[in-house]
Image 1 (cartoon, rainbow, N blue to C red):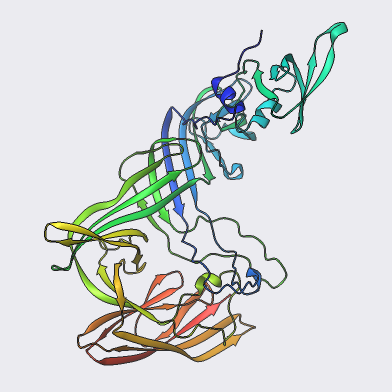
Image 2: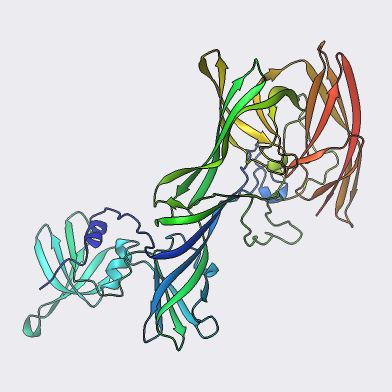
Amino acid sequence: MLAVGAAAALALLCGDTPAGAGGGGDDHTMVTIWRAPSAQAAQYGYGYNGYYGGYTYGAAVGDGAFITERRSVQVAADGELRFPGVSSRIDPSTVQFRSITDPKGTTVVEQRYAYDLGSPEKLLRRYVGKPIVVTTSHGETTGVLRSVDAEALVLETGAGQTRAVEIIRRGQHLLDVKLAAADDTLATEPTLVWKVNTKKTGKQTVEVSYRTDGLRWDADYTAVLDESKNAVDLSAWATINNDTGVEFKDAELVLVTGQLATAQPQAPYPGAYAVRTPAVEPVSFTVPRPVTVSAGGTVQVELMPARSGVSAHKVVVYETALDQSAQWQTYPNSDCYGYVPPNQSRGTQALEVDAPTKGAVLPEGKVRVFRRKGDTVELMGEDDLKVNASTGSARLQLGADDKISGERRQVDCKFDDRARTLREKVEVKVENKSKEPVEVILREYMYRWINWRMDAEDVPGSKAAGQTQEYRIKLAANSKKTFTYAVLYSW
């Protein structure tokens, strides 16, 4: 009399998770994935609450994706429209629906998200009032499921004089549950279900878009250095991970650096500042061919064609202080006498490579650096590829540098509580102790708050990242340079 509903249902009830199914029959799919800026670990762990100045700040943000799918679907006579194969990590509140066939005459009046196989609990609750077979260590019981909770299953068994209610405790003695054959409304994969008003039932082409978690991409680079020629062979790949439970087949893929805009939480108390994220100009990369992103899988696509023999030149990257900006993104540092750790300046030798094309900016990511020696190639190590977001110049770290020294000091600071601004003037000194001329890239961090602008500069700089300004200085042998800049913060 009773039969197993589906192999997937049995597997789920026995503890196996079925693979996510794709949305077959897609006419067109576009997947845009945002990669949020990497959150820098707090370097000064004094334990302060993030809302009071932010040494343990709360502004770390996740990644996200926006999916747009165009498909042919069937609208039932009662106006029900089912759209299976969406992400299991969808945000249903972001769903947008548009009928291509009947844009003015088809409107959604009700929406729900269904995934009956999302968990055994959800599946069992769908079968309340239906026949099931329960096998325990004491034998097999057939009946109608009347109730289910975390502790027990309630079955109605028999009929007439033999009718009874049996409570079966859930535990190790519960060996198996068999369900009646599933009906057509059982959602065996994540599904959006709509009730629509329309005069055109039957086949329609619709376009659906939504936001989801579970998609992430990272940039991975391989660099082979030929130091004798000051040249680099550079390849760049995007590694995409899909944890949405659904396959996106032959999708148009757009990769974006930056934060996917979401509603910001309210401030925890009057006068506090809500959690915010750094204002980083987003950069997008459109993959030039369709890509299939498998459920639970990883795929790599080329960010740019591999480049051989790219000219490069050596620079010294110098930081007069450690970057504290990650710790001041919940609440601004408006204390003119804010603590800056002393003696934290450092210099590194780097090889700078220009942007692959004019106006192009590569995303920062991991780079594996090799050195070519004659006919052999040896691994030098792994590093983060640093990129100036304004100029597109990318840098490969070669090692520490001890020939450049420098320092910074605050020469003026004015806080205006009424205007909600702080203007800080900083003096920077840099010295070349070597007998050779050196090009130095000074990285200065506008750590106090995410909203800032340069108010004055002796040397023109460039905005390298959300809270980073870079200055390019050429120093002759055994020479020094001193300059100032003023930055205006507002909130």
